[in-house]
Amino acid sequence: MSVITIQCRLVAEEDTLRTLWELMADKNTPLINEILAQVGKHPEFETWLEKGKIPTELLKTLVNSLKTQERFASQPGRFYTSAIALVDYVYKSWFALQKRRKRQIEGKERWLTILKSDLELEQESQCSLNIIRTKATEIITEFTPQSDQNNSQKKRKKTTKSTKPSLFQILLNNYEETQDILTRCALAYLLKNNCQISERDENPEEFTRNRRKKEIEIERLKDQLQSRIPKGRDLTGEEWLKTLEVVRANVTQNENEAKAWQAAILRKSADVPFPVAYESNEDMTWLQNDKGRLFVRFNGLGKLTFEIYCDKRHLHYFKRFLEDQELKRNSKNQYSSSLFTLRSGRLAWSPGEEKGEPWKVNQLHLYCTLDTRMWTIEGTQQVVDEKSTKITETLTKAKQKDDLNDKQQAFVTRQQSTLNRINNLFPRPSKSRYQGQPSILVGVSFGLENPVTLAVVDVVKNEVLAYRSVKQLLGKNYNLLNRQRQQQQRLSHKRHKAQKRNAPNSFGESELGQYVDRLLADAIIAIAKTYQAGSIVIPKLRDMREQISSEIQSRAEKKFPGYKEAQQKYAKEYRMSVHRWSYGRLIESIKSQAAKAGISTEIGTQPIRGSPQEKARDLAVFAYQERQAALI
Picture 1 (cartoon, helix red, strand yellow):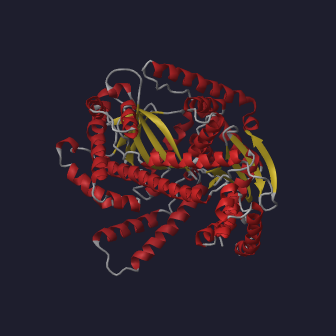
Picture 2: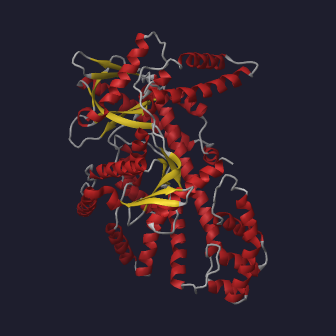
Picture 3: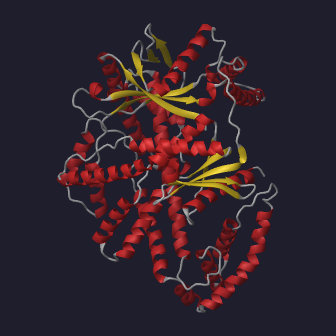
């Protein structure tokens, strides 16, 4: 991953900031709210939910009809395009979440129908546990050769893919197809014991806890499935007042309705409008005055000019944006903007805490996405090779078509022009690219009690070169981890006291957590370079919160059965006793630092069982095996 995002603050005269705020808050955000509402009420909404996307042409048609209204008119063209892209992204994400939740519920409910205790299996089959185990042994003997054969076909390139997943799937499929009661019970016995014959007697308490854990997961997913459709940002507080009036004038019919009303009342209204995306790098014009200060203008905003205030670490990036644009302009467009270091930008307001006019209180920021490969001549050449291949394939396909309409012909002309100019490389410094060994991977595992654990693995030699705990990664800065934890506990206590007084309870944390993430990311990159690792494998974040919450709830129910208040207190105390970590933020830090160093990152599935070291090791091994299997 070579794309990173940097930010800067934009400073301008009061009239300039006021003009932009009014455009974004009074025009663009209400437009987005209206589009979101109309899409949610559309008769084809359920069809789009099944497909997972909204037709782009429909959104364009909807915006074209809305911008004729006075309250949505007189916006720059880029604002309308940004609104379409944002609504499409919001609903696409929401659709994906809903579909994933449905699949998860179906899978977990299917598993619950299979999951039975040893006593239940004995009662259902009318056989003793020994007979069930004997039948299970016969099944294992029958299906293991088939599983081994399936996996041996995947070892043509020295892969050593684990046989358990394929064997599990074989047994699961046979369970659905088999009608014989004893065989089904034996298959259920194998499935719940990870395709093995357990020699230990089943612990009824542990079985009950594991089953209850799955039931909790299903209950939470069903609650999430009922989540409201996206409704946008209520900057004026009108929606909150409407909800308050409904609550005051009506009585709740059930607990779910009461929870929905409570959530709506307690939900904090948005303070800032939706951001505006500038997807083209030529939508921004970069300037420099006699004193060397950098400024930027945006397409569609006329002469409105904003001064750049950024961190010194990022100043050279903004200077590069100016250099690229000036070089293209002075060369009379001999260079292609597709080789600009800047890829896109996004205008966004950050909420302030003072009182006053919103354009004075809130701060305006510009988020810039750039390709780090464009920083050197070697990286730029790599991008040129990729783009040339892609454009050539596109032009070849276009030439095979007999009749092209005017729009398609214009697209072909632009692509041909880009291909002609793309080989004129911008003058950039030379720097040798990082070359790691593909067989050496760094696995990074996440956990509840051990936030980060690292393993450097040579998968070809099947050897672990190094392990690192979070304490070893941070070294002398390990005390910052405890300081962050204490800070979280203080803020949690402060928030609890404010909630009891019905006072504002949104207390922002310091940037200590972000600083710790950067230290960890730097340490991981340093170790990867030391061992010449080819890539860094990061676990998927999917379902981690649900797994942790369900695990804690299951522990609480076992500790205090039937006593809800004690369960809630225990769960709260347990959460406070372990590290609360922003894994998403840490992943972004690792990706960003890896991109700067030229080290690739991969996403893998972290094993559920094992120590933190074993999880990190297996994460790297499984990622390598999946990579090799994909080449077959």
